[in-house]
Picture: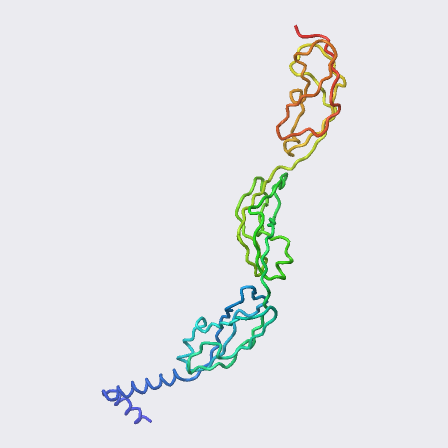
Length: 309
């Protein structure tokens, strides 16, 4: 054994020996590269020539697993995109369709064989395409700030075109936006918002709408009982019957809660009136956003006994 090793070393030391050793190595590499190997490749699936009045639904296969066998040098260079499975649906009819797969469906180089295709059959369903014009519904999440409420919502455009599988589109009464968050908002919101297909294979035009949400303080009402009635800026002598009024007012919560009905807010206007009896209506100087819902009585009997000198 030692003698054989000494001969190999001696040959490697000469030019002839080096050439022989290089040839042996090259042959070994060539044999290793051409040894068969097996590889699993995920090949994407696409559909071509789909009839214009149909669409693919319930397709549960986005790719198939192709197990191939061949020389390592070939198998290692295979590109899944170049092997893409293109299924021709020209002439297909509505309903379920099953397509058995075969090796000749794939772009496989010579010298490589297909050992297994998973799944071996592609199942899908074709449905007629329907287009409808549907109203847009704004989907809200969250709640405005305490004491505020949504007063109004508008959307532009109010209607959009929706195209998709007949079964889905015919069941729809409206199409929603993606959620618009109003959590703790105390002022209006205006933004462009996408429309939601809710995971269905729908085409919506336009894809976005402009949503405007008006947010205002909550409106409340409050009763004010036995509010004394007086004349404003009148220096003469007079009597009022009845001497008090009942009022029910409404307006923003913060304004109503802090409102005080003083004689400069609720009063009688007697300027320019002569001595004698008069029927006078109540005058108001209230904040613009506060309204009178109820008043009892509507008019007052005023007797002016003396005018200012």
